[in-house]
Image (cartoon, rainbow, N blue to C red; front, side, top):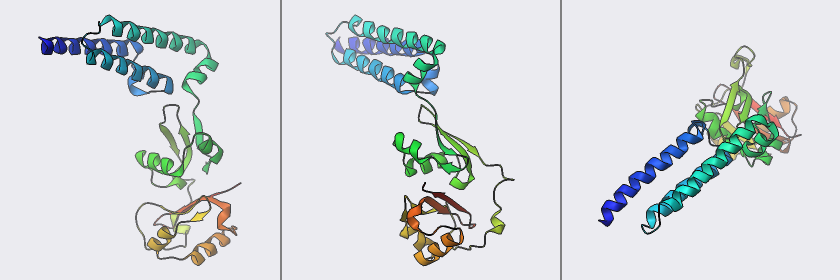
Length: 225
């Protein structure tokens, strides 16, 4: 009997949680802001407590769930009318890359590092930062990328640097520090790197925040300000 009661309680809780999430709207499935995530986690936790304690009346789980749904719907409605309140609960999009340049202040404010950026660019099927005109970090954490127009991109044929490595663009400098393992893959030295940078008007490695090169010899350099 206990197992049968647990089975029916599980089925009932499932449909209650499913119904509450449906009432909250389809946007919960496609995009979870911080506020949405908190509500969803709390509903899931309440459902677990109800299932763990068979002696607890279902109403003690249903009432908190309904309360959370009402709160969410109320704030969602008010947010539609009030932009300031919407920004408080959902946050603002942040320009991580603007006009082809990395925005380090934004990255620092959102605790968003270069590894995070490169990972999400690859998820957007972009392997070279130099191909990006704008990258927007959405409140949900998703990265929206706008690529540079191919016509405005610097032709790889004009690049005179020939390298052995073929694959993803290699980071040569990250936050002013030379990546020696990348130079080793290229079969190049720090002296070569310094000469190349000096030809581009850069005298010191520490003046560069991020620098990459791909197998075509295409450079991406973001200098510190």
